Image (tube, rainbow over all chains, first blue to last red; front, side, top):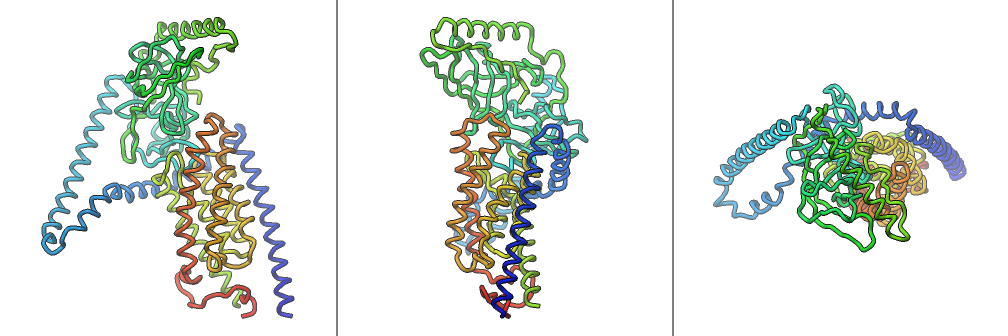
Amino acid sequence: MVANSSLNGLGRNDDGRLRTFIILVVVSLVLFTLSARPETAGAFGFAKGITQTVTAPVRYLGTLVTMPFQGLGNVVSNLTAPEATLSELQAQNEQLIAENALLREQALAAERLEALLELKNTNQLTSVGARVISSAVDSATSSITIDKGSMDGIEVGMPVTDSLGLVGQVSEVTPTTSIVRLITDERSGVSAMVQESRAQGQAEGAADGSLRLALVSADQKVEVGDLVVTSGLGGVFPKGLPLGIVTSVNRGDGDLYQTIIMRPVALTAPFEEVLVVTELSDGQHASAEDAEAAERQDIDASQNAEDIPGTSDGDPSNDESDGES
Amino acid sequence: MMIVNDQNQRTRRLVILCIVCFVLQLALAPFLALGGGHVNFCLICAFVAAFMGGGSDPLWVAFISGIFYDLTSTTPVGLMALLLLLAAFVMNTADRDRLVDEPVRCLRDGAVMVLAVELVYQLAVLVVSPGAPLLDVLFLRWLPASLLDWICLVPFVLVLSRTKSDALTLGGSAKKSFPGKRYKL
């Protein structure tokens, strides 16, 4: 009797479980479909914004808590010293280390801020300073979260730079925080040029954290160690910001374009400062000569494609998709 | 009376599990990365809840965990919720605490499901917003993320399999629940 009633109870339980499952699957599918559609994505952006704002303190706390673990190796080696002889000195040493770390951190912060100010003055950037709260939480994108949002004048699409070079572009904005898609994300694309030879191309991210300089025709001169900067074409990114240093160049026989891999110059870490460029002045756009050079390069590449039998049209349709991604 | 106590106890355990995993997801996940892959504590939360068994509660935990993950990441809302829901439904076949009874099988099943969920998730993101080469996605995001997920799942399973079911309930009696006898007591 007890067994029967238990079985009946379990049966009802299974029915309820199946019903819950079906309802939740339908809700998930509806949410996914709606959030993937541009017409309804705004409401989900709002919900994400609220979540990001509410959870920002926990992220901030996480960054604070995890910072000391970077020096975990030193702590372990200190623990192996003979305790009896070192106990008093250890206490003093720890205090000095803590003070020293604080001072060094402040000195480094001052250096970084000075470098940012220098970059801001050199490039005449109209910008807002921000601090990196955390890195990406998902495995599908390469991004960082900064502590400035729409209340500080940040908008989607604005370029973000640190003292060394371009970091990325604002992809999502909440009232108090913003998500910056890094230039190393596979979906990023920035119009770029080799500083030395002025060869134009498009810097694209890769999942391994490197950058590729695409659409540089095979006849352009590019060498290992060359600095690649933003070209300013497209009018989204300021011209002349460092992007990466060329680490390898590959020119295959019959290839229209070179395969160029770069190491990004900008480094982002929690609590590092960045600048969000809020406005571009006239001098930061690509000049007419640069645009003409880019066009000429495209024409040359197309002609080369016609000269080589069996190759398709070499006209790069997305050559100037600066900031589109 | 015992059924009510047992349900309350389970609910408390699930709530604590969710809070711990959500805080870890926000505070620790951004810094636990291997290659392009990040650990997903929401997935771990859903999996552990599914292993705990018991009616439709694990399904709700999986759904809420997925929604939380989607809202704190840059991907479409509902995707991870759907995947975790499916995984929880597949794994939550027994109306008993599998963590106590068969932790090794939980880890084995967890490994398979981690690989499956992360693979479908990466492919779905690739379809929704294309751009990355498939091989890069597989070897630099899917495999590292799956490995990290599984490594972080291990301590959860081991700790909860050795912990009496009421140790996480902030009080209560110290009786251990026996599989299959819950409704007779």
